[in-house]
Image (cartoon, rainbow, N blue to C red; front, side, top):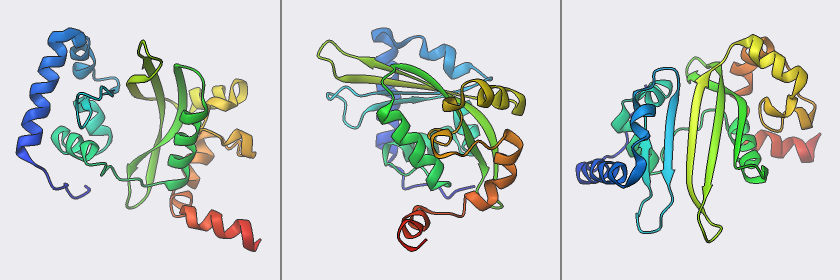
Amino acid sequence: RWSPPFQKPALVARRREERESERERGGGDDDVWLQADHCGYLRLCLDKSMAPCLTVASPRLATFHNMHPEEMLARLQFRDMPIVNEWDWLCLMIDHILCPDLHFTRYVRWTVRPEPPEATLMAWTQRRVIDETGKLAEVRIWISPISPGEYDYALEHTPEMCRPMAAGMGDLRTAEQCLADYPADSQQVLAYYYVCQYVF
């Protein structure tokens, strides 16, 4: 397990009150996803009146992160979530920024544990909500396990869905290869790719 962050009990308590208030204002469908066992769920409300932003996360998502739900919420609020595979994470974030769709799905490698490095395959589905002024108001994310067969089928028919930006860089490794190579890939930090650009 990763070590727990510095937690403020008052902040954790306030988060509970905000989640209850949000449900009363119409966020009741959170309850369905908070109880779902087949997927992890995360909702970020980007309303400026709430600082920091309201965060709703399911216990199942915390399980995927090998954390207690309150620990994960605290880490999200303090921007302290661990980044185990820097390259996969960077490509995922760039893909999210460049993707024009409000609702999309990507197949990603997901860290099961950092040491020794081990990964599995997940479907990352994201939905963005735009307010009346055209600004991003809310982000919802669903994370669910997928089989190697499902990944390889997508790789053959819609490669852009598999490991964001990988296909564009010529990386068309199968599910089995991606998982087998994960221990080595996870050790290659961004500085490695920066040096390679100028040395090789």
